[in-house]
Length: 495
Image (cartoon, one colour):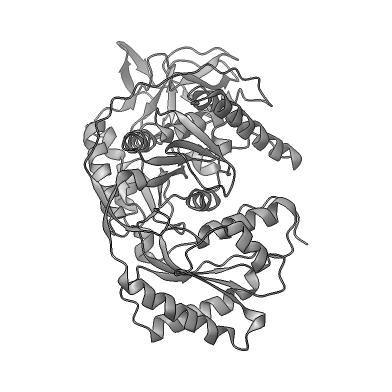
């Protein structure tokens, strides 16, 4: 296995594939380079002289500038590099029309066809509280259902607790309504009980307006203050849903019905080399089959946003992308917070130096397809193809947002590892084999084999087959452990 990787021809740094030691000599582009310090796995070293204030180039793009003279063989990281990013930029639409030659596949997904033509890849039974005050009652109902009813035909039964639905103002109140309405209508649920208290701001009559249309056979509503025993009443409603779900069967459905969320967290120096490009290739493949993918984590587009903007299908989509980026910068400034606080301590430990470094790797999850739409938080996806979604980088908030926009599964790449799961299957894809072997109770798929001689074509085919297997019902690691949660985007005041 090679000891280092130079990603793009114009780069002036290379990435260590294994721990390298001061004094090691490497041949880079035909020239011998002696390392001037230890280079941890995933970190960068200079392959050319970089003068103070000159750009440091990785992926073929600047990831910041040198704060001091950097010599050949030096460790290149936060101690000698600083971001180039600053406030709002002027953008010009320079359309790039990707030419992708991807074969059509005859693969099918064995999913659940819902009343509105949407596909579920799980058949689960949920309680959705409209307010956090009834979390305990909801759990009591769930406990009775599990202990008293035959639920062997149901993939999972749970309440998705949260602390919101009351004492919220403005966007927070609207976001909570949109998020919970999307949860209640998600196709991975074969039955849902919407449980309310009765006096909360998120009144059920208003909540129903946000929901719009729903399947009366699969969604029930209960206001606790209007019945004598909400647990008994809720149990009877859940029993009806359990009985109704006994007739549900998987059937072969086209790949065009699949919507995947693209997310990364705990990134390292290999994220933009292995797992993210793999997921990007899968996204392009799925879109070629008529499917849909959604990319979010807006702050982690900063520094790579023009790549996405120039792939906008139309000038309107370009302008919407500009607004997506600038509005999120305004959100930071509104609370007097630095726009370029990323990367996190874990990212830095893994070899990511600046936000540009992270963003150029992060956005590779979007592949090379055209951007067809820009979605607001909680907005359902309606267009096949690559969509951008307004949500933050926080793992659980972003993964929840992807699912709330209609994704049946989230593809989550990581170089550090995490056990969490959203309310839809959340596939953990490791960037390196060491992590995959060490945390097999967390990681579902290893993209680290791309560093070990396996071709992208081979790994992509394995990944396609594995993803279809998951969509057909095989459980991911977080599903086996039961680690599933929701997180709602909150931005303002709580009364």
